[in-house]
Amino acid sequence: MGSVIANIGYYLPNVVVTNESLSKEFGRWEAEKIELKLGIKERYIANSDETAGDLAYYAAKKVLDNYNIEKIDMLILCTQSPDYFLPTTACILQDRLGLKTSIGAFDFNLGCSGYIYGLAMAKSFIQSEIANNVLLLTTETYSKHIHPKDLANRTIFGDAATATIIEKSEKEHFYKFVLGTNGKGKNNLIVNNGCFRNKYNNNAEEMITEAGDVYTENNLYMNGPEIFNFTIESVPLLIEQCLYKNNFKMQDIDYVIFHQANKFMIEYLRKKIQIPKDKFYSDMLHTGNTVSNTIPIAYAKAKEEKIIKAGDKILLCGFGVGYSWGATIIEV
Amino acid sequence: MDLELDILGVQQLLKFNYKKKSMKKNEFIKLLAEYCEFETQDFVLETKFNTINGYDSLAIMSMIAFVDENFNLKITANQIRELTDFNSLIHLIGENKFE
Image (cartoon, each protein chain N blue to C red):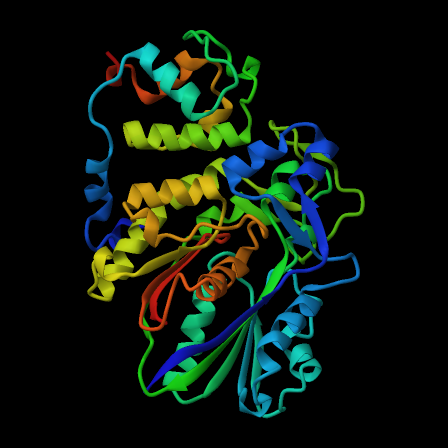
């Protein structure tokens, strides 16, 4: 007995933010420079009245419209921008999507590593016969965390949601997982205020980074150099561990999908790990870094474009906020 | 990352990737400026980073990559904040790495 990804879909919200519009608004980075360096031309963000729950709903509809929804018996949702402190976004979506009430539903709070953890849980639920058909949603509206005058983060991040159905199957399509955590990196990618350690502060002081980006403690803060250092240190190790644990070499892998952080960063990691260019996915041109959504979006696109086909072994790898990281290998 | 997780000694293995030959200082400046895509190229050891067109967070990402690739050395955000000119970066990397 095993499990398999039966279907993946994704949804991008309607508001488009182009490099040209950012370049015009800030006058700092030329549109072309952003595209060349970061590999991003445009990103989509949610309306002010549109939430991560809404985005997840639309993504889920895409995979459920041709699916017997009675079959779904577990709903897992990954977000760091939930609709409410409580109740759980997944509970609201159980009702909104018309899923039966005899299912488990819960959120988990992870960023760029989230999809790998979601797959690990889906596989575990199926293996332990807790569920047969898991709906895994990732959804993020980081745009709501970002200060309007923060060019760097507004350039990098886009909003999106994805939906994946993982089904019980005769053959196991998931290989072993490697997961990792280092909370020492917590301050390097953080929204400081808004929960109970530090409550949301209406009078929060505006701060300016050396680069000229503005943020307050209510907003997303990212220490770019430290995050890059973290990936340089941890991702090569993570890939080696994942291959070792599964008794594979890189040449056994047909295709590699990393979290699409930004083009420069993942291209540097690719070179460092010596992954052949033709085996490596790099496309965030029309979406930007959509946090936990980048891997399933990349997977869906690669399948759509027939870059990957049935039987291929795909290495998936996520890393970021926490710090948190994870990797696995799946057979399409 | 914890070394105890380093089941293959990968961190050791990865070290053979970096280019071991030492570098001339003026060659270093030229290569770094190209890598970071600074808009002009006429730099000297004393050129201040904050006077360079294009020394921004994107260039800093490149600088980190360049130093990692060529010297197998991590430079932290705090160290970058204290850099003044090319000389200060060479000092940080270690004078003995240069001819």
